[in-house]
Image (cartoon, rainbow, N blue to C red; front, side, top):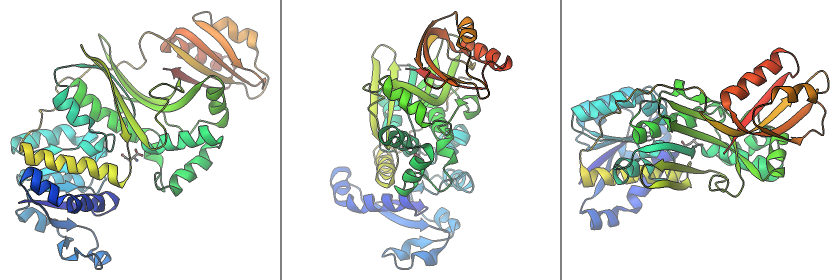
Length: 410
Ligand code: HSE
């Protein structure tokens, strides 16, 4: 018998409990093991007095630590006290499973080292991509192939909002409200909509797949809050969709990582991932491109990844990779030349196109929308991000434009 303790009984915790119960016969048959939930740690036990498993509920973490449970499953979220609980569980030689990407992105190296020291497992599949078993696949099945770049739609909430804005021609605010009503966006959606949630997941993915320590502060992060109906309309007109993309690229001399809205072909693999779905694409040495996709958020997708982590421990007992050792040099712009969609606004006077054209001598520019004389949209090919950024800065400094946006076209 393997005993597990759940730290937290919210949406994900209750989902994990359901899955353990539902699958108990199969697990016994296939793994010759019975999984028993020994404790459920909550803040307020009384709130759960009608639960049929009420006898398992406790508000004392000491009880969990002192017990002989084998696996501690942390589904409380937040950094504190999850960090302290996980550390003490590892030091008490208990395996740990967590869905907590904030914690792994921030303290993953230290916790992995601790798990190794105490010969226990630390699994965190649910921290990235919900139901998609991408971390285990990277660690094990693809271990022979260094990853050159990783590209993903890593946040279900923002993908849901962007899909709504695109399909229903609605504003960001209205789409956010719809995402909150559908149970995806939280009351305070900042971590999702400002891009931090996706950045933490990108940091975890990059750590594992490129053996590189990528701190969230080294990722260029831009969320979706500044996108408007016009951005969506232009995307539609040109056959693109806008997706919040997280991308890490290993160049010869540096690593570049970003989370930002990007224009992608509407019928490309990235373009076809809508609503709460996530996707992870990798370009691997010798075997080329690979794509994974599935539901990235919600009770059952997250619980599914945690359940997989439990079975992984049953099969393998102890197996934590050493934390990454490479501290990459970070480059702040995408290297090489790319295609961009640029929007320039002049708030006080109509845009002087002639003046603007003089600055864009590099690259191949095509005007896409200039119906409003204060708002110019064009695509430009064959220009580096740093050059584009410098030109836009100059235009702003010379008051030729007041505001600007630019998006990479993938
Ligand atoms: N808020 C996250 C998302 C949940 O929307 O993707 C899963 O990490």
